[in-house]
Length: 345
Ligand code: G3I
Image (tube, rainbow, N blue to C red; front, side):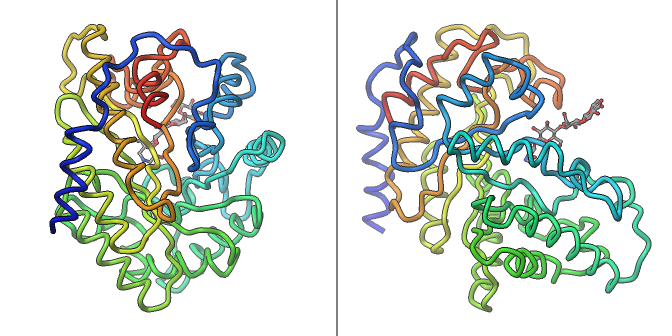
């Protein structure tokens, strides 16, 4: 317990005491500052059309997560048809630019193609359909995708299993089946369970960690947990987040901070992204990075930010609100958050 308290207390006392730099250069790369991967989610259309976006992606990050390109609706649009075009372009981009490619996501309850949502079959036929979906994709990218988000967001806030389409048709075993199918298709790939709120909701986190620890003890290949880290100012508590990181490591799972962004307008008010607010955001980014650096290196799969510029954040369209959650502003200038990470990492 002492070690735990010390782990939490020390960073809060000594971590990130320096004022965030309000202006800094991004001439040097964020990803060259750490021994673990620094990644970003990418929109492939921007990557191949927006010069400024592409230059930041190329220079600052050494791990890439497709924001949407690998999702079922994009990559498996018809039951007997896969669309590899953009996914292959992204994989080739990563190969040419020496970047890790993290596959997101095989099994989810959102962004499913119509044929999948309306699939008409019994439990065995659903199971076969899920196996085909997983194994066709994982086999296609065998040796080219380092890690997969095999299942995304399968738990409710109260720690129960989400009653998604997969569970409705296959039953609770769909989770371990999905991981087994992915492992069969590429035994070398690292396999993750990915979810939101694990950094703040201890009920959900405890349920997730014990569920996958039990599966791992049964011999199911599960390497890590993706903690999405969609945080809020006000609202997020870095101490709780640090405790969550420790909990993942104590269960002997790799920890991928998989989708980090920090909303500065969670209550959808009329706000100005002024210096004070952006420095608060920078300070929270810094604390999270500081805590992540404290976990044992063998568990650090990397920190991935869910986008590059505020201009394209999912938050603005999804919640239809003004927000500034990322490291670069609408004009592709580095924000205090970027500068703070340069200081901390
Ligand atoms: O591709 C279609 C396009 O053809 C159509 O014209 C357009 C307008 O309807 O929609 C386009 O699809 C959009 C898609 O992003 C690609 O841009 C969907 O409407 C839109 O809902 C979808 O949003 C994505 C969201 O997941 C879906 O829930 C976001 O970009 C993406 O950032 C977000 O990412 C998720 C992670 O995968 C899982 N964790 C949560 C995270 C945020 O929701």
